[in-house]
Length: 441
Image (cartoon, rainbow, N blue to C red; front, side, top):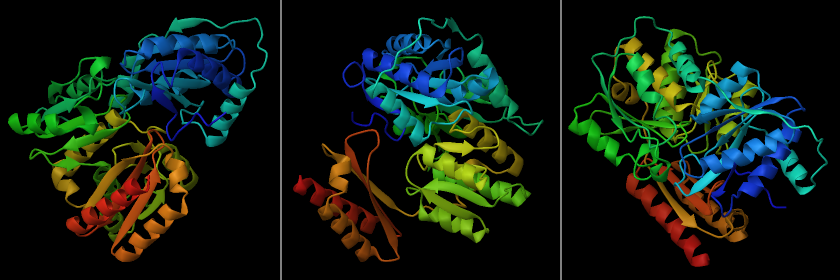
């Protein structure tokens, strides 16, 4: 059996690659590996049309393992991490394909600490799916988890440490990508007295992520500029990522958000240890800005699980990805888009500076990126031809930049990134690498 799990759970085209039958078996295997009979599991989902179908399959699979199943309904992915701990559950499952298009879906699991599964747990689940074991005749119950969204919203507002925070003079445009944050994010921001303008907040799974949200910022940029807003906030479909837009329409990405938070905490003397964990995708500008203030930066392979594990090993308080998947470990063990937005607004209020001005403290080196569609990304990545090409282009840059080619963990793509201090140079080398890969196919 080929590996099911990518960099963030199991993902594929709904009812084609990811079927109800496979999801039921996946739930049974996860239940056997991660919980004992009589345990509890919480299921949440985003707004996708296929979500209820997979919710039924997951619930049936878990109940057949004699687990009590609690249905949280449509709710952001990080809410499940919170609810696992709040309910003392054994595990959680989220039905979402995150930033992928509406026709896709996926399954993400969280263990009893509210953290993503280790690779060892994933391999154990795959092994059980390959060799089904006998189950007892007893079954678990399935019921709704009362007030799940309300409890999660209360948790988010409770992370605010400044009692007098008041955003009544701020106009914020929030784009929820027709996803799971639509019923919660505007409410949380209004709790801070902000004037909130809603964009794509309907829970419409047929349109999730389509031309909106954190992967498509143009409509948010226009709305911020047209409404003379102070900030734009964009989430992805399941709410574990966030990107910000300045009053002039400029993007404040995950690197800048991590830099803003780390520098603020360092200035207050509460960044202990003085460390930020990022992935290989993070910008050299962030590394230089942190280093200038005595803050170390550790890079991991792409994937929030890698970031989380490294943060845990080093006791880091801040970590994340350039894409806006940010972890504030003092509050949550997983990336949380709404939490990140709240903490950044709190920092801006405390410092008396707008977030775009704080972001200017984090220089951004030009990065050129492109994706190349290939049938077997990992196989091609291991080819001597590609490894030689990467080393050749690295040699051209020397110490003046970086070249990164990696197989996508969620799609049949090779992702190419080139970074240097000159935009044209980055773009030229990135295009050259992509073209040579395409010609080799």
